[in-house]
Structure formats: C-alpha cells, structure tokens
Amino acid sequence: MKVLVPVKRVIDYNVKVRVKADGSGVDLANVKMSMNPFDEIAVEEAIRLKEAGKAEEVIVVSIGVKQAQETLRTGLAMGADRAILVTAADDVHEDIEPLAVAKLLAAIVKEEEPGLVICGKQAIDNDLNATGQMLAALTGYAQATNANSLEVDGDAATVAREVDGGLQTIKVKLPAIVTTDLRLNEPRYASLPNIMKAKKKPLDEKTPADYGVDVAPRLEIVKTAEPAERAAGIMVGSVDELVEKLKEKGAI
Amino acid sequence: MAVLLIAEINDGTLAMDATAKAVAAAAPLGDVTVLAVGATAKDAADEAATIEGVSKVLVAEDALYGHRLAEPTAALIVSLAGDYSHIVAPATTDAKNILPRVAALLDVMVLTDVTSVVDADTFERPVYAGNAMQTVKSKDEKKVITFRTSTFDAAATGGSAAVEDIAAAEDPALSEWVEDKVAESDRPELTSAKIVVSGGRGVGSEEDFVIIEKLADKLGAAVGASRAAVDSGFAPNDWQVGQTGKVVAPDLYVACGISGAIQHLAGMKDSKIIVAINKDEEAPIFQVADFGLVADLFEAVPALTEKV
Image 1 (spheres, chains in turn red, yellow):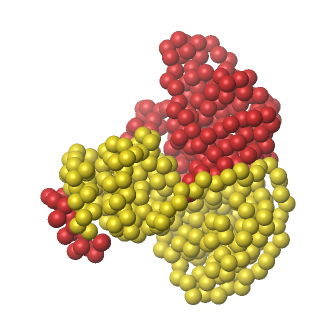
Image 2 (image 1 turned 90 degrees about the horizontal axis):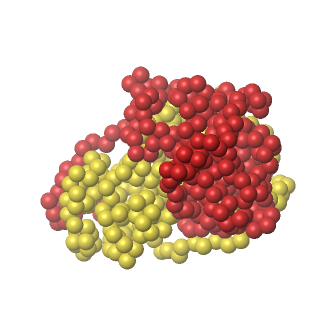
Image 3 (image 1 turned 135 degrees about the vertical axis):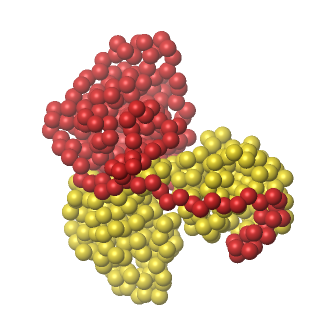
C-alpha cells in the first residue's frame, strides 16, 4: 500500500504574525517558514506505517510556491520515499484554497492509487480545517478526521477521533482519508545523514495544468486586519483583593 | 435567500446553546430552515422549532444517522441543498467534519469559524490563530459556513415553527461506528459554560490538576487546559482551549499557570472577564487579563477556592 501525505509550507508556528499596514494580508516576506505542524504528524504516522510493514511507500505532496520544495525535502528527510511538487503560485502571499488543493490531490490520488491519504487536520495559516474532508468528498472515499490513533488492518482502518466530549472510534473502508490531531504521535527530527540522503530522493515537479485543475480562488480577501485588542487590566496584590474585584464586577 | 441550518444534536439531545447561536448568526441571511438529523431527532426537532427566527424544521430520523458519520450526513445535506443559498452550522467538531465534505460535493469553498456576517456574500473569520481577522467575499453561488458560536448571542426561544419529516438519503456505506468514549462529567459543557477555569503547564502534573477542578466545581464552571498541559498529559484533549482546541467566550475565564501562548489566547480572548494567576510576572497572559495575580498557583488557587 502507498500512503500519500499532503504537506503545506506555512509560517513557522513560533513566528509572530504581522498584519500588513495596508490591510492586504499577513507579511510573509523574509519570515521563517516551516512544515505545517499537523502535516508533520501526518508524515510521522505514514513513516510509522511503513516501519510497521503496513505500507510500502510514502509519498509527500505539496501544492503552492516553488519554495515548498524545502518542505518536501523535510518530509523526505523524515523518511518519505519520494515527493511531488505542484507549483501553483508565484507569490508566497498567494494561498491556494482547500477546494483547489483537494482537486489537485484527487487527480494525484487517481494516478498514484494510495491506500491511505493522511492530511493535517488544519493549516495554521488559514485555519480552514477543510482539505482532508474535501479530498474525501471528491474521491468518494471515507474520511476519519481528527485522528487520535490509527490502526490499519487489511482493507480497513480503525480510527479513534477527537470529538467534543471524548473519543469516537470508527472503522473506515480503504482507501480512505485520515486527518491528524495533536496527540496522534510526536514527529521525529530528521537526522543529518537523512537530510543529506533526502537531497537525492526523487522530487517530481508539476503544475495545475498537468492535472487540468483550475486553482482560481473562490474567495476574495477583502481585507486583513489586526484583531481587536483588549483594554489593559489591573494587577491585584492578593487573593482577597481578587475576590473583592470579581464580586464588584458581579462575576462571581 | 434561504438558509439550511444543521442543528447540533448529540444522542438525540439538541445542543440548544450552539444551535440557537447559529440561528442568530444566520438570521440576516434569509429564512432559516433547521435540519435535525440523527437516529432519534424528533424531540430535538421539536425543541429547535421553539427557537425564534426558525421558519421550519426538517427531521431526518434514521439509524443511518446514529453517530453522525460524515459520509451519510453529507449525502443527506447535499440532497437538500438545491433549495438553499446558504448551508450553515455551529462550528462544532461534527459540523467541521461534515460541512467541508458538503462544500466539495457542491463544488464550492467552505467558510469555517465565521465570526461576523457582513452581507450575504461577505464574512469575517479569524486566521493565523486569531492573530489576524480576514474579511472574505465568496464568489460561489452557494455558501457553506460554520459559525464560531462564542461570538454570537443565542436567539431567544418562544417560536413555534412547523416540523416536517423527510426521508433518509442514500447510504454511501464507507464507514461504520465502533464506539464512543465519552468522559462522564456533571460539569457544564466547555464551549457554553458561563465560567471556565483552565490550567496550564504550570500545574505540573495530572494529579495536581485536581486543584483546578476543585475551583471549577466550587464556581460551577467547566474545566479547560492549555495545549501545553494537554501535550504534557495533565489533561484530556477535549479540555483544550485554543486555536487547535475549543474556542470559548465565557463571562469569566480563570487562567491558572498558563503563560498565554498565542495559540491559547486565540481560544479565550473574547471572554468577558479574564483572570490570570501565574508566578511569572512577565507571562503574556497578563496582557489580556482584566485581573492579574502574580502568585504561586498552588497557594492562590486553593485559597481562591475557599473564598469564592
């Protein structure tokens, strides 16, 4: 079985986000970019399936600017076997929408016929939480989102999902689309020898035209603004003073 | 314009707060029809019919929908979509699972966690963990939207909409339910609680989380946790407040031993009153707190529990 893992290049989660003064978006020029943290978990899970003998090949795919090649190399250094880069944007500020990403992935799924696609549950830039579900819709496959654990057994996978109030376990027919939640695993760091080896692993370069997919956005970003700031509060000196203030406010 | 709103129903019970808030959010978009779907959904449908602003309730009661699996539920919604300009739901884990699937089947984009309706095509939603607010205009003919309920007030009850049974749609038979592991709790639900008491990495262990829970129980509050506390195994994931967990906006939020990472602030900064207790006076949580107390939480939290 092949496992396909889509990975997105996003602003590093430790970097402070700056909204551009003209309201046109978030400044991504000269900012540290990394693999979306939930996608790292997805790559890790795919590699573990391969190590456990449940998968033969792990393919990482990225759709975006050509610099996403670095993100794919990270996936290869972690242990993926080969990579596909679909260059769909020239400007790092151009975000390819989940619907277009899902259409491209669906075309790749048709070509590669993976038994499983593991996606991050959401990208930490647009926070949409949609690509996995949309890919499942377009391929007609089952979906198991927010995975807390994943077990592959023959032609089915059992997935415990993080839901409101606890865990829901479902069994999905393969091929299926799984999206990762935080506690699925802890991704490994790539070792230096593996980083060197990753440079020699195959990386196919494609464009949306190769798959006949139109990536024109459906959503027009009218403006991007700073969130409303909270007015500064006060420091209290003791628990008693805190209780008194909260009573004054009618909070307790 | 007409809106199809998917009610939040868990095991036959309507989540009134989430559903009524979504109704309020959707009201400016047109006539609201609520869809109640589940293995048992009739009681929930009758209750949803009392929400003001609801013009009709459709009930799809079938064993097929017992666990709100994404594939059959999405197929049902798509079969009804023709009559509506907007398909919406409160942004619960169920809706976030189902609605993007619906959107892709309709060949439209999905708008998740919408916090404000500007007009029928234009919406506001947070991006980058709430570090930026984006206004987006949809060019799609149909809009598929989840509303972040914490930013809307619930619609009142007192209405009496008509309730109509509808047939189940086809079963794609791609997945099956195995089991639920639901944490039994008498505490209020995290996203609709009036008071939330949360613990962070500073709590130090799962055992010590009890002091957070004691304060919560004294206040009749829900218990929350930061991602750091969840990552460290001090608290279960469904207590997680933040960008990757739940977004809450209670009347009172008490953050204990939480430094205030951006991702956590994204989940609670809309709370009416924020209290922060942390021994590090430089902790960023104090920048959003209405009342900050620099103290050892192992002394301050039990003292607070005693005095409230």
